[in-house]
Image (cartoon, rainbow, N blue to C red):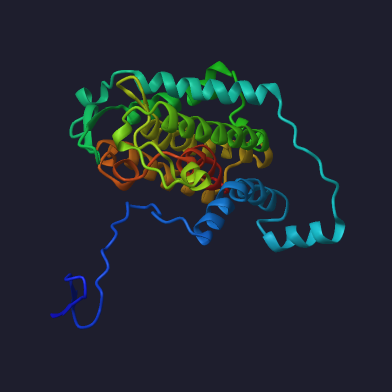
Length: 313
């Protein structure tokens, strides 16, 4: 260490003639300095990604999943732009589904009393950055089973809706889900700014678009038990995943049988979903719950990307 005495009597220290700059520690999964590249990425996700499910479903439904064929057809024929319509039936069906998930999410779990080694009921999450421990009602497996029992009862006895309802109205449901995703993201952004549940767990970069994408509030809640993050991560979309897969019943209507590949896909993806709900208490200690703030990428991803992109088959 060399010391050089300045004319004003102060000492300036040099270590190997280099000035050491203080290190800046960032937050997990967040940019603490939103540069233009980060902002462009945020804008791309916010304004372009919502078109992806619609384009992919169009490619798979009309062009045998060939994106290049779809683009070439649009380029050469320039089809007229037709704004997709949404029927009131689809709107009612979507909100009945969301209402059912809300109802099932607040029911007390009885499965952990009946099923050995299954962890359900009231469980504690990880410690938040402000030192808070949230509590959750873990009953996802129960909700999943009830929904599928209702689906099978409807197919064989109730006949309230067609087994292929999602397949028949998929474009309408995607439009409704996109609107719901943006609405939810807007609500939680305003909530995080104006009336957060736990202000000390909020984060902000100072950039509106980036904060809208990544989320301001860590665990937005209504009351003590309704947690936005756990509900939307682990209820409407992931329960719908296997319900949408059961729209393979359309193959039965069209071809008189369901293909072996579709049966296998339903089985394998059902195993994945059941495994998620079996380990839902463990999920409370994962990145989604422990680190991610609740913004557009979770709100839209849960309501649109998961149910409609994971079920492209």
